[in-house]
Amino acid sequence: MLSLEWRLTIIGVAVLPVLIIIARRVGKHLRRIAREQMDINAEMNAMVGETLNISGTLLVKLFGRTELETQRFGERAARVRDIGVRRAVLGSQFWAILGLTGVIGSALVYWMGGHLVLAGAFSIGTIVAFSAYLGQLYGPLQYLINIPVEFSTSMVSFERVFEIVDLPVEIAEKPDAYVLTNVRGALTFDHVTFKYDKGDEGLLSAVRRYGRIDNVTTVLSGSSGGAAKPVADDLEAPSPHQARETALEDISFEIHPGQLAALVGPSGAGKTTMTYLIPRLYDPTSGRILIDGHDLRDVQLEALSDNIGMVTQETYLFHDTIRTNLLYARLNATDAELIAAAKAANIHDFIMGMPDGYNTIVGERGYRLSGGEKQRLAIARVILKDPRILVLDEATSHLDSQSEALIQEALERIMANRTSIVIAHRLSTILAADLILVMDRGRIVERGTHAELLAQGGLYAHLYETQFERSLEIERPADPFEE
Ligand SMILES: Nc1ncnc2c1ncn2[C@@H]1O[C@H](COP(=O)(O)OP(=O)(O)OP(=O)(O)O)[C@@H](O)[C@H]1O
Ligand SMILES: [Mg+2]
Image (cartoon, rainbow, N blue to C red):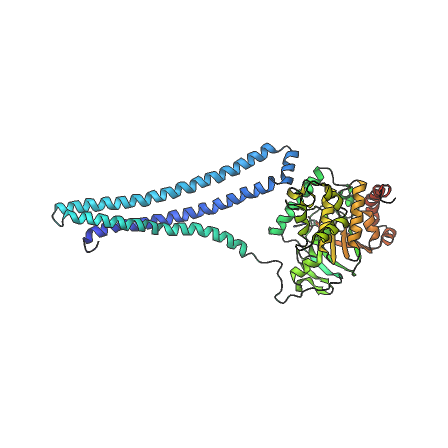
């Protein structure tokens, strides 16, 4: 082009700086929109996940908030739509501007070239050749200018990925971590203090949030028993519902291999929190937790989770078959082991009574099963895992006496010869415990056996009178398996 006509070349490329400036501006703008679009999308997805699962839907229906939720969803979906349109329009505008500047450049070349031809500077063939070259130059240049724009919007996705990847690993394994083998099951808490992270918005808090939703539904469906009542309200102590800084304070105790420890205490005392520290879902803020004398922080995580089995208050099941859900505890278990575990958990006969037996789909979170059946499945699952240390958050719900007895029996089987820590709501568990730890407001306030604690006449005695004696009435007359 330069060898053909240098003046036309200058005019032809003079539009390029303009293009570059425009591209920069649009790139910045598109990048902001892309970021916003992803955030809004994520918000909508979170909302769908939260309200359209079984528990969420149940909550919405029970409170008659279908319209409100529809409206809330409509608002969010509208924002997703609007920003999508904005992004598309801006993108098209950008391309239109790119095309337009090319056309303007060509027009200028023809205009200036025409004048020069008329003035006799060169022949008309030069302009024709020149404009053909110009067309070949503009096309690739437009793509080239678009690349940084595309690149900067794509970088937003990378940024979001790295925001997650760069989060500090809270529970990290040491490089030379100790592999627990032949665990005896001695568990020690040594002056453990624990505070929840204020800005704790990690995965775990999300997990816990979902847990809370389950609790709400339990209360709603009326299956929550009296144990959830804030029994310490009328005690002298400050209300347990008042938020406090530390969830656990200076907790020390020791459980010998094979012993059963029962945790009791008013709501919010920190019982669940304490059980979360054992499989290292959180690390203590200060103090140590030891298994067979090994600090949990020095132990290999996989070996740790192999040796600890947890049965949570709310049973979580995947939307899959009973078999798959049970095998989750031990992927390579044989059918015989599976059935033995189910039998030990008193759930085998029930499973065989279902049309598809072990291949029955349990439904999302197991909603097709009753509370008692789910609990027994959870017990079967942990029996299959066969951990040395068992952590059990007893369900507060009072089932009918027959299910209650089936569960009781299953629990006795699984607790035998194992170190067990149980957040106890059943009197039978408490009576069987080698050690009772009474917690209140993050501290262990009393410890001992049932008889010792009752004689002290403190918080335990109070809890016993208000909670457990009642469960005694429910448990006693109703053991149909005694005969
Ligand atoms: N993820 C969390 N972040 C911040 N604070 C929390 C978190 N989970 C629990 N807490 C607080 O820690 C305290 C102890 O809670 P925890 O769940 O251990 O009580 P609990 O003894 O199990 O009660 P309940 O008998 O009602 O189940 C409570 O004050 C609670 O509000
Ligand atoms: Mg709890």
